[in-house]
Image 1 (cartoon, rainbow, N blue to C red):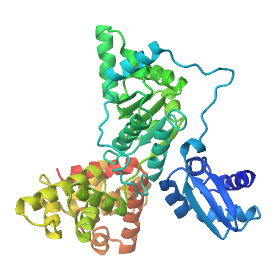
Image 2 (cartoon, rainbow, N blue to C red):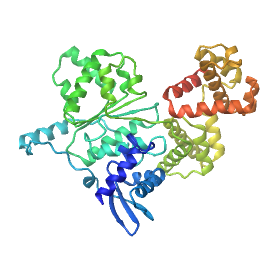
Image 3 (cartoon, helix red, strand yellow):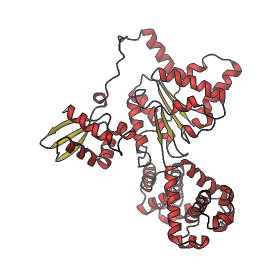
Image 4 (cartoon, rainbow, N blue to C red):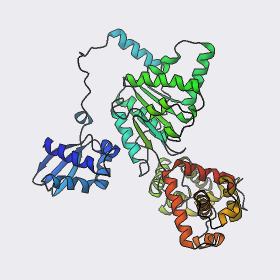
Length: 451
């Protein structure tokens, strides 16, 4: 049976939609538990993996069975113990040694003095999983179960407010619970930088030990290391020290390592040497789930039309979604009424206090042209030059979502038919989900047009 499953895994690894990171994430720790009377039972690490594989890869598994001379009538999945799935790494030519009493006391004393910096409210249980973050969530659970063994370093990137900090701290909290003997430290790169400067000024002892004597180092906002050459050098040595000792390193940024300006090549290569995961904008279903989960946290049940309205109107930032729900519930309590659609609509109108009422298509076109360094005439003209076309499509997107204009109305502004406008807006919508730079452009332009 083991040989059969090895052959099936080999087939799956060759599938274009599975090979590479997807195979490593979803199939590396699977096992064929039994195959009797046409019923295959496959062991997976957790229920989230079961949901994902059932949804995305079941047909691929069936085909792989068939290619190996088996035709299962039924395939089911069961959660198996992670301890059985992942054997402990063995170091050859070395005999295990129990730590001395002095070492245990020292470790315990260091841990008692150490503040992890974690927020206990950030857990896996209250993290909303959707298509935009399911890979990041699954990898995070793997790291929490086996710190330092796989996906090291783990590097999250994506726009602000998409859940990177929540997920990183959820890993840290889970490790502290599952591995109480381990020391976890959560910091921002700004903390590291300030400590480094203080060390340079005062030459105090023990600066490096604070970061190098931990089992798990979690560093948020690593992009702010750019332009700080000495800090980069110090962090490089800290990274190497931890990585050589198989200590887990978790990093987050608003951009991929290759996009951080002035980051040294040796740090880029180390950041990219483990698992790099892009956390994208949440889709509508995920946003609605976040709205409803937050309301439940406040012990309030929202009507579907209310949660749908909020999810539709807050698209780019989870913090804004949570803030909107909290504000809606507070307004309802103040008026002693149940949160309803009318109240939610009023909230949307009032949540932009600095936004003027005189926003119009002309202002959007002018501001977009200035932002992208092209002329207003270029945007309104017939040029199909790439940068001009992108600016034009961005302006169309803003008109649709900020002015609530229809495609035919936008088409009149640009002397184009509605299908051309629709295709351009769809392209921006797609790129917003996939490209952090495009998301940043849209947010920057939103600020500009409401100045």
